Length: 396
Image 1 (tube, rainbow, N blue to C red):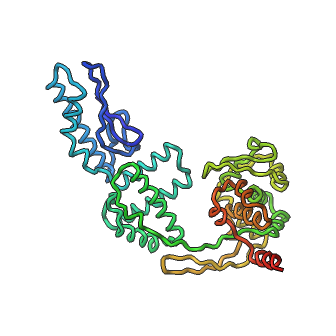
Image 2: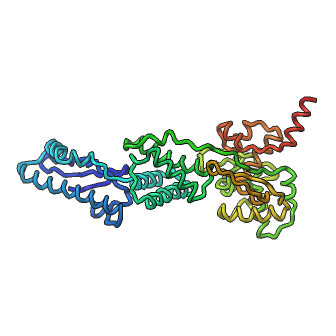
């Protein structure tokens, strides 16, 4: 006899019935985070705290399975059948199977481990999910409680939203994304048949318009021609490769000669899996040739830090007035433009300038691997003067 863990986290019991030359398998109905399972001992790992209490309860139930099996072997010395085992296990453990033993944390850990196992979550997204989870654990400690899925009612979400706004100083737009991560997790629970309070479906956070910049053609000319120290000039070039390719940083930093197909660079986006077909335009080719198509590996954080540095050196220092909202509270800030420019500004600039150059939207979407018009329009930061000029010319 042995206990084995399925990928779903369900614990199965297996018994070899020699009289029938048959391996009997039975689902205990017990679920556990795969990271808490000891494959050698075929039992939950010994841990402290909340998880330790759950593991101890599961171990107790599994030991009862072993005891019942020993009794049945003695009672059926002439040969134990699969039907008898199933009938007796159902009778003995029916109440135990229906007893909820897992907290919110257990289901969350199972969700993350399954997504990691299936390679369906990127490191950046994983960090955001873990950040949300950490906030909920903090809320548990603050309220001296342990949350179960059934506890995620309207009152819970009101507490969570207030906690994130007041104690974590999270703006409405960031809060909206965090609630989205929690909604994705709870949708997964629902799909897998776990009992979930459906109050989360009614939770809504109003999104606020945020200020994102896109560079102008004049800005690009300044960046191309400005004299910079070599150590900063490289980051300028890498940023411009992002502009002239229209890709996310996670994709344009991977560009090399193996992606060349004819006059295009064909690359699959890490975030969406969509293919992008990037025309090898002269400005992009010049920069890639400069580095022999081999771009050193750097972090997005390091790139952003240097983007601020060379944009400041380029004189992009006009003050921008921005607003952030925390519920009904509005916070106004004055920020120099160079501090609003980041790696993703490159992609936003490509899309915005392509629109201003009257390149067909379908062509730009094909280059960027964008499928919906809504996503495309979210990138646009059209110059108001250019828009006014175009309207005047059209109606003259």
